[in-house]
Length: 223
Image 1 (cartoon, rainbow, N blue to C red):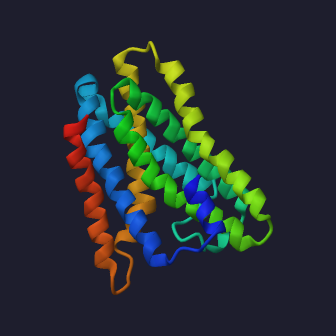
Image 2 (cartoon, one colour):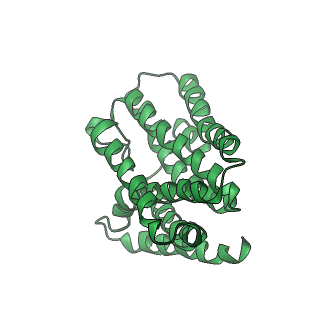
């Protein structure tokens, strides 16, 4: 919600925006490799690759063939269609809620919530920026839209927790594996290109990326 409201107050510089995105990419990759995969590896064994590729391909197909998805800087010409972008990123938020619900059943809710937050923040920032730059919607309407947007993930988490509450460890691990696949694609396809974007201070992006990974390594001892 905060990420969505900030552009109505003050526009962020591209450099600051990229630092947040780079950190988010590191957190997502760290969450996948240091928390999610180790947690589900025992239950899934050799089948661990199936849910991951399903999640990866699901987001790839949705983003590239079915939905409009706001790019990191929020300035791509085909992303000016605010409503379509709102639907696309809202669906991603719902999937993140499912990831939180599945993770909570395996005591990973804290890590996954952090991973969701750090990539939802810049995406909400980009989405709100689209509305602001479009000049079509009033400030009040943008604030209301972003407030509703912020509710999608927690509602998805609550709904998935109710569904997964008494479920066996194997399908639960499969669900978390699909979530890991979606995180992997978002990090690689959406966020990671920002890390090596061409400008004279791109090393700062790399530092933030590494800090994101390191934060997930440190958090291993907290869960």
